[in-house]
Image 1 (cartoon, rainbow, N blue to C red):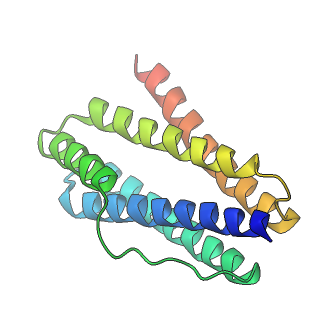
Image 2 (image 1 turned 90 degrees about the horizontal axis):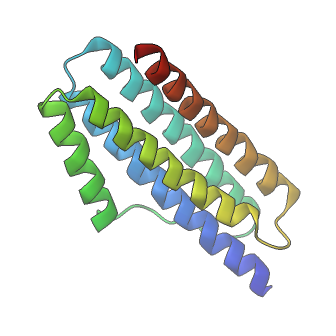
Image 3 (image 1 turned 180 degrees about the vertical axis):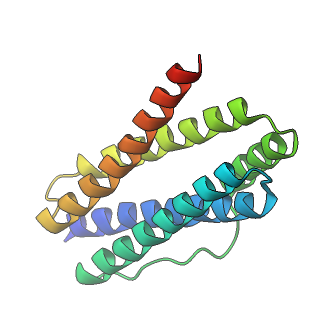
Length: 149
């Protein structure tokens, strides 16, 4: 039982992180002027919303109670300030680096949970699917960066 509680706690932490990232992308969408950047933020915000929906369903399926995002964390505030500054300064290179760093941090959280002992197969499959999507976008960002250089 203790193992399940630990898994549910980590799933809820991942859920909160997805809420925060979705919120950052959504707020950035309103601030961006560039249509390509707006489309990027809209797609990523939608993706994170979908990730959150799936994680909530998995938590309920395992008998847990999904956490809700009530207050902004200091991590969220720091990330948002960086995004906002890069968008306002029209500094797309640093903005993309910040996005890439955020994705790396997110991958670390997924890996932490995937290493959990007694992780249910359905949870494992869901996390790998979401993680693969994040990796895919990271690789696309790197390819685009190399193409531009």
